[in-house]
Image (cartoon, rainbow, N blue to C red; front, side):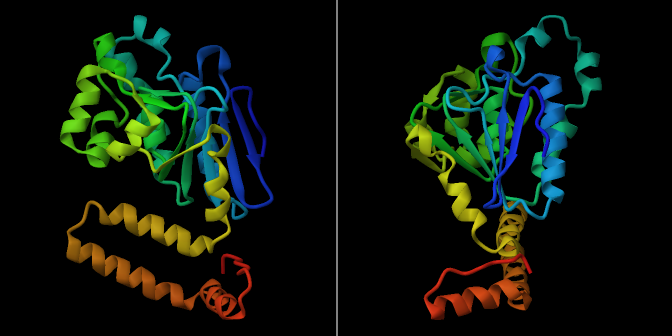
Length: 255
């Protein structure tokens, strides 16, 4: 898959697609061009049957240090509205493949919001998270209040969005924002594990988990039960069971 000047994309032999933000001169600030490129890339990867997991990273030093503040100096309400940036974020929300945000360095403002669009956040020990928009007379505008609220609760969310403070990877994990903290060089390892499993099972797990969080418990349990039952009609399920008894690694084909 082709890369662009501001986005590096690589599909590895193990089914892991690696997307790296590449605006080092701006600490990977999310300007409109980068958001459009991300949206188009996620749409393509979602359709690619060779892709089983997607890693989103900013590289070794910084994930994304927010939106491009230069945009804020002259933009009007109408200009911001007409950009309809919500459509670019939606392609991440709609992606059926598991998304792992591998975060090293700063993930601030829009960068933190971008990480929260992932299914799993793996933070290197150098990672720093925060929603500092209040320091610019603004507020989060791409899910910072609502995704944080659902991830870490009211009181921790209010602390971050009202103070603009930055937190370490370990603090973020303690709050429930980060899935795990690892050495900076190991933030991509989990993706290979997930990519080795049945892509049908993985995608069903993701879909049911996301849908269930906004449903009543009984409705969500019913949805989970039906998805569980459907998987018994896949070749991957039989391969997994037989591999277990044969004491060998399963070879999942997505069938």
